[in-house]
Length: 262
Ligand code: KIV
Image 1 (spheres, rainbow, N blue to C red):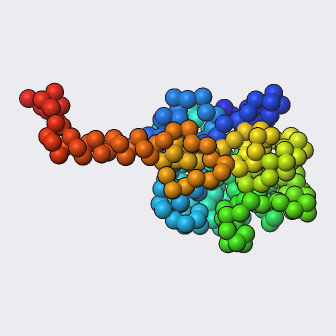
Image 2 (cartoon, rainbow, N blue to C red):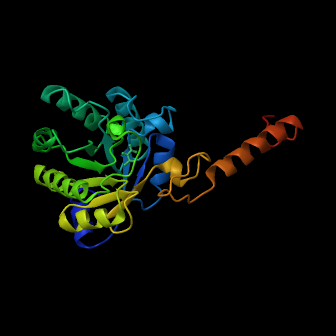
């Protein structure tokens, strides 16, 4: 996959599959599948570090996770997420942060929102760094939204979203993530854009889907959002395996002679 394939896939109406990934061992497993691309998302803040939102990761952390994913997935297309405020403190700071993610191994960066970001996106793209946009429920703005809520429910908000998406396209984004918006709104934005729209909680009529790896593997039994299909009962399988290990240690059936050195 290259940045050009995103456009080709949209033109050919072939859906793009994207999944989040933060570490090298799961990156290597993803590398054994046909999944198109990987997002080193700032959701790592919640998923791996246990925070309530995505505001608690910095550029160094995102770069370290991006480098780990690159080591596990040498040939994959990797998008590095620009963390909270890392693209809002001026051009120089933004460029060194985007550069850090690219030098850690990303093929592109992602940043949230359109308002106030258009000039900076133009500059990043003009500097040779592909940019993925992110609209709808942009988690870095969770406090402004008053929680993790579906966005663009009113006609006015849906129109504003469409304008923002067009502005991102015009600024040079190669693709946009659209998160937690009504399916009809996502379909309408998707049909207006030449660049692909990758949805999460945005219904089926978009150009691709992204899910958090841990959600699709069912690793957190306490998190059941409507949009995240569980493709595996990962938590159940892992708990059973750990319990079996504990049992076998307890009754000394592990290790056997074959599992021991002579
Ligand atoms: O950080 C992330 O994982 C994301 C996806 C949910 C799109 O931004």
